[in-house]
Image (cartoon, rainbow, N blue to C red):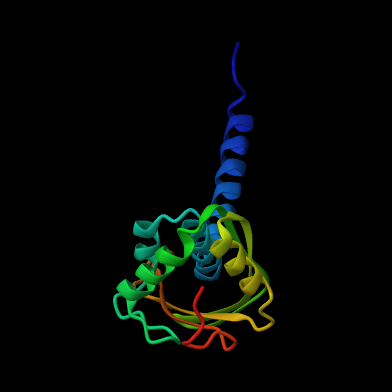
Length: 161
């Protein structure tokens, strides 16, 4: 049995073209930014704080005056009130300018928790305003996005679970 060399070369060329197009799409900085946002929310929902830490820039600050360590500590204390938790985003918009970007999204929480967890679900899901996530690309790598700031105008510094 002999393989037609022309057919083989065409098949390899088609495969390489498809792989190149997919790679260009998947590695695009805007696409990687959205993936970083999704992975951050997934890690927070799974309460994987070491992974969350990898997404936060060292110079992270938020609307409530927290640095990276304080934000992770507060989030872990609030979210420990859940047995299961899924954090999803709705009405997401992305604005990019060079190495900086802002993602605006309504966050929705779903899960099971104790009484405090149920109150957090109720309050979080009743928010009308979008969360603002400010990201910065730290290097030439399209996947090297770090979160530098979060804000949500309806949550003031006195809101606690």
